[in-house]
Length: 286
Image (tube, rainbow, N blue to C red; front, side, top):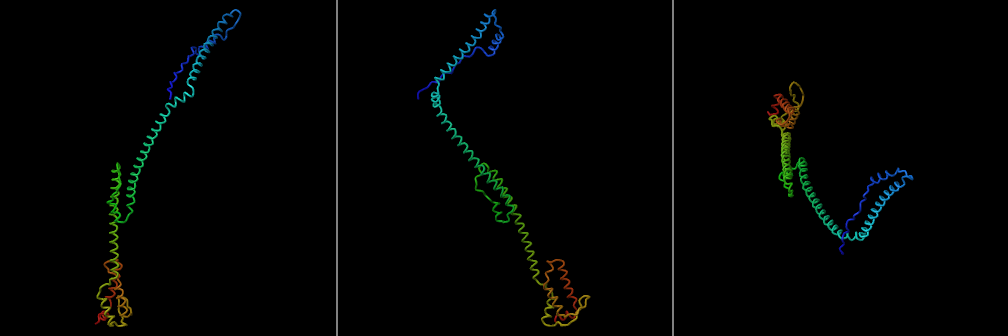
């Protein structure tokens, strides 16, 4: 490309007269009254204004010529040529800058995503600390106590370790509570089983053996009158002994039942002891 010299700066001639000076000059002659006597004076005034106008016009004309010559030597084609000299370099630099800015933005995006992922992992551990208090499985709780996370927390390792330790601590406290509750429940279950077994075990009493022996051997008279307490009842000795025998066999062990049940046992035994001497002898096979 042909080397093109930049045109020099345009030098315009300034107007020597300012508008303020011209306004004052015009005022001096505006109200001048022209007569035959001052005709010469009036003509001189006109010449002053004329010379000023010509001076201004000549300056303007000269400036217009200067501008015209400048534009002639600096047309659109020259402008385009000059711009094409530097614009490709400008565009290339702009593209390079855009690439670097994109790289920086992409690196920032990746870094932001990396930090967000680590934070999410730590938040998941914190959420586990909340959820673990509702777990009742002892094995799962034991696993949480020694839990390890195969994740690189990088610069957030301290924060992650604090969350992990909190999770382990909460899991340990929960496991302790679950084990305690289980043991208490096992105790209650064992107590219930003991009670159930006690209901199945008959009371060992000589009077039952005597009654059974009398019933088996037929020593009990079928129509024997027996006095029980203050009440007089005419009832078969066999029926009375059979009734008491059945009651005693079905009664629970008084050591593991309520006071009401104990009183019931005592009442039956006292009734049995109040059988007449003859009935006891008959029940004993005498």
